Image 1 (spheres, rainbow, N blue to C red):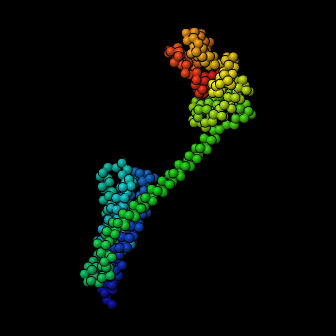
Image 2 (cartoon, rainbow, N blue to C red):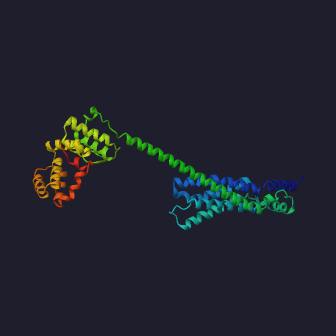
Image 3 (cartoon, rainbow, N blue to C red):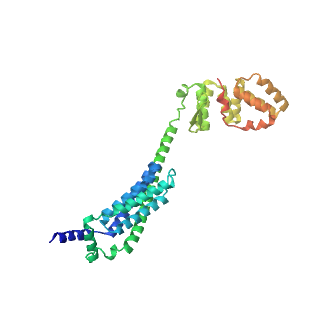
Length: 358
């Protein structure tokens, strides 16, 4: 066999190995990891997402080159169709536009990606073999290669459909996985926050409460009642687990073990009825300023409004607690009876402890 015939056979062997259909199927399969990579890159840093226009072009071209092993122009066309399909899926998945680049930059990146896809997809023909390649193509020796399965009418639509469907499936899978990770992380954070929230609970037995100052005990009683925690200085510490029973337990401790007048007043208003009235009376007798103020409210609302105002004015001269002073000033600047509804309010208000000193 002459050197020319040997070269001809080598060229023929290369051309027979071409497979446009394999290139179409191969690049369609590659589109899944390509679109997943694109979504991952965009989720990590959206600003570099547009660079995937070039990277995906290179990867698409490599996929066609590896699976197609072709020299024909059809391999460049297959690569471009696959590339455009991936771009379309990326655009519809909103992982293409980052909002920080100009249109001209996007156009440049798209042009580079398209060129890379088309150029890399085809194997180059050595310059000295151009004539041999042309002769083999024209000789009719490539009947196997020119079967219907490799015809452009079959290959190009197959590329478009397969790449579009598989890259879309890859995008759906990637987003579903990201959503799963997001939900898992969110659940983990919520569990952590719940554990942190539960850790705010304090023991409410007598031994532990005995270690607290009255001011701190009041702050925890209000925190359990309202779900808002203010420290002894009145600085907000955040949300707190609500538990009315524990709030009443702390107040009862202050009443029973420390004979605390303000605790008697607050618990008396919370409990109401006979038990509450007895605590309110005990608080008044101990000289609690809020208890005495509410006694004047009772008199002014149910007996004599004018005399109630006189009592209020006299009482104001004796008051030292700022929250009580503010209540009196508001009462004096409005109609006395506008405040009568407050007598039926059993809420534990923060102003009862804000400026209170045992």
